[in-house]
Length: 261
DNA sequence: ATGGCGACCATAGGTCGA
Image (cartoon, rainbow, N blue to C red; front, side, top):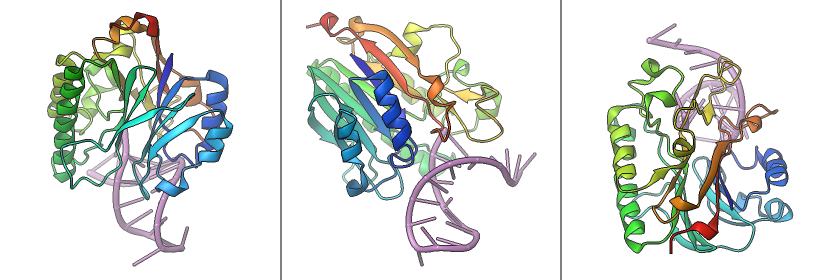
């Protein structure tokens, strides 16, 4: 089963690129972030024509997450638990073929320090608690999305330029590490322990051409799903096309026959 | 230190992303 996470930076601006990608890679599951579309402006017909079902949580202007699946999935959760006043559309969970899939768009948090950084750290604490619940339920699960976290120095082209950035600050990395310590596996790093892997290159200064990137899109596997990990990677070629998102699709290949019972 | 790009919206420049 091929599971992809892809921050599209506007679902409607990226629709042609997305449909092309679905056709050539034929993923089973695609978690999308930054739809930048209200609920009723999601291009459902085009997604269905491409052969996918969709569950999504839109929002005007900003944020928005969706999960596309080959066959119908069951929605488990919409919105990250733990704060009833949080109105940002950043989290959705579905059950699909015995797997729990959480699609998330973690807050950016800049500028740091400040209220946006506080919101980010609070959101990460809520994610940690939700992660604990999922592990306690013992369901094979994957947390997939744009985490807006650079986990280590090897995940950024020039670490010294990012020390004060909300994506790389010690508090952010520590919060991500707490999630990992619960038992979640960073699938890309597990498959490629020493490689330089980036998933985002900004639009400025020819960042993609210079490979000045960062690794912030992640797929974290629960213990029962870890034996099923076959391969993982980044479809960098998508970032090199016309009118791209600033993120590239990032994926894991799972062998569901090897999921722990 | 700033701005560069691309997307959003009370469609013009301000705001946001990372």
